[in-house]
Length: 113
Image (tube, rainbow, N blue to C red; front, side, top):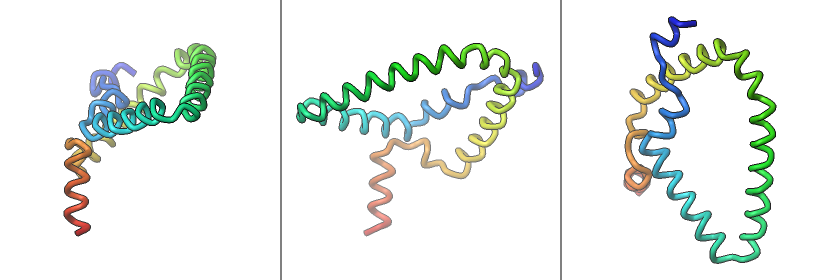
């Protein structure tokens, strides 16, 4: 599977999380979530319980899947390569992915009105 790595050794997840639209949307949702937790004590408790549950489940899943991931590395690498190629096409088709969410919303509102 070395030929796959030579063609494209990028990680599709890293590429997605570095898209301006993703970054700005994540920041917006994160700010709303943090503000909600700080202004509503009842929701804060519920959110903290949910966060702890997600952390526990994630940790258990990671430890369980770690050995399997090593065995499936060639297949994962090939799937990553295909996903990167698909993302290349999507980025060419939707240049909006390279704009922050506030710009996207302004354009969307302009077209609606």
